[in-house]
Length: 311
Image (cartoon, rainbow, N blue to C red; front, top):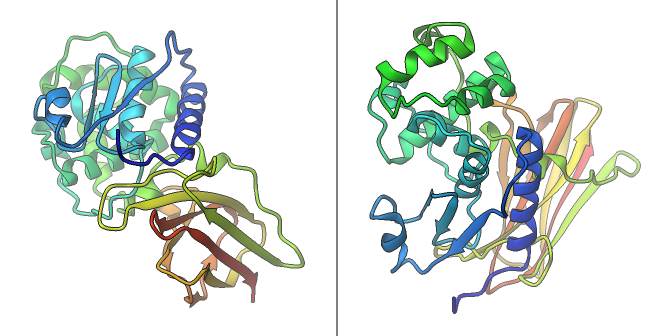
């Protein structure tokens, strides 16, 4: 590739594969394979199914330097965890990148019976996967993914397997899913790296989270395709005392930057706020772990910061 690849793209994706494998209890027989290919060549690898990326034969291909969704597919398949399309894509969304702002939710029956390759199907499948994990536990979901049934993608083929593994008719879960809240992909996902980072310390009731976004840094991923060519990194902290906080975002040197403050939870307790340098907001924060996603243009490196203090 003639395009730049930020150094952290290797380290952070390695960490994702390691953490996800450990969580699933999967011992990888071979290293996960990831190919960063030019957008003009993606059709050759993905057979026209996607303009962005795909995974098959335990290999991932992408037009992005980082693509956790596709790597999650690779980890699952190396562990023998295959499933009908709505469930496998829901799994990859649940452990994926979470950057899409799409919140168009479809009826779950449409997704399960007529899964299509578009944002709304992927978003809804990710919500349903997280709903099932909260309803039955991750072990049960993984058990379902690991069934050897030759059910392909047909609803009538996988519904009996679903009932046998989860102990309920799939129609019951579909009905109850209607009451499951929608939230951003970042809030819905299980961020196995970001939510397990070392916690930044508080000092006298104030915490300062800083990120130096340089493409050569070990923790900076990207740059992501798009007009901004984003470099990304994250920092983590915990809130022990709930209440209203003041949050101030900054940049040095002054330039465009994106900062998202996200709670490690689910759609039931979702918290996701976006700030730009110079913004000051007053969020109500519950007890729990949080991470901050920092983004800055590849051609405009520098520092971003977020200062939090309880009011």
